[in-house]
Image 1 (cartoon, rainbow, N blue to C red):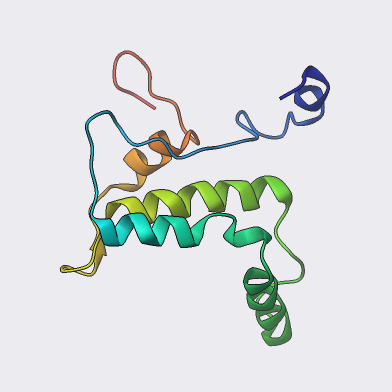
Image 2: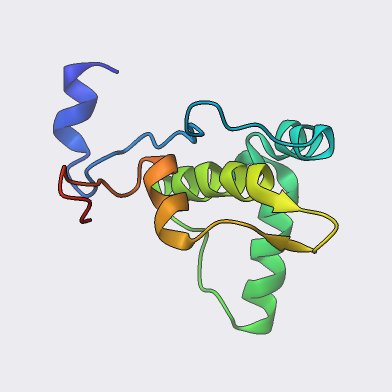
Length: 112
């Protein structure tokens, strides 16, 4: 990313969050396929239809901002990675997920 872009995005600490699983962590083939399908979800027509439907019901007023959509994409990748289809739940805490997506930082003492 260029220095020019970094000067404009001071609203968040990480304008380009990316999900990176911890070293040695693996997932199921099913979850890998889910992750492939979820790439760029917020920039596709499906998401625009979901937002339009929410607008028609009065739940939203407009499309989420670009930075928030990038965070949603990163979190969706993390959710798909940690999803357990047998238990039908995500086997990860919100804090761990935020750290793996680059939306939160952890200090050397282990605090956020």
